[in-house]
Image (cartoon, rainbow, N blue to C red; front, top):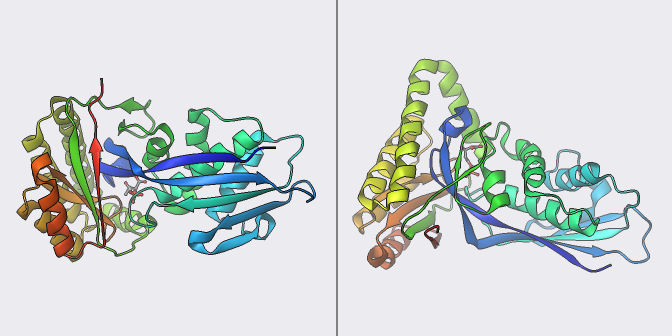
Length: 316
Ligand code: PMV
């Protein structure tokens, strides 16, 4: 039996985080510069069903049977086996590697899950279609996020820029011009589960007020989709800045995010905002091509611990 690989990219949300949990649309893109990989190798000589799991990045080297039920990696392996129900499961080792930063709003959990599902289903001779991969990954996302919108598993499975709305069919984006997105990490780790739960408490304290904020974010996302289609950078920048103000009203921004956002704007970004769960993690800036280096430098000087620029190419 050959060694089988599964792979999935990182992702970044451009517009609409948090409001997307409440049914508003959001826009997210794959970040192909980073990825999670799963490698399945037959364990020769071991009895059937024996599964060895290795993830050196998180110091995991164990048997599947020793992983707790709710461990996201164990859950992804078990869910894939349950979906396929092979007549015979040969012993195997699954080795996981990822260059996607953890707890930084880049979808690392979803990408690891998708890589596992792809590698394992292929190893068992039943590679699953995207829709099923994404659906299974969504179930596992619940362990990471509590009440995920489904945007992470969707983007990393389909590996395309998406306009995502909960419960709606997948819509990809039309892009008329390449755009340059500078992603910078505050270095502060904040699990998405916590910010999603804090926003839920806030919403429940004054539903009308917060529903109105979510609705305005939804309008921004619709306008951003149009601006991406037209390549209207100044308008996109203004929409990012407005989205950031609304995220501040949701209390998911932070001083370190705001320092990076200010630095990017000061260096010529047309707009900047936090991305993902917030209160740490990443911010994202839209830079005209000739300003990318300046923006990157300003972010570094302002204390970003990691900077990654990804180019979103036009669609044909
Ligand atoms: O980028 P992440 O993985 O931190 O995702 C956060 C996006 C939220 O809208 C806050 C939550 C969700 O499930 O959509």
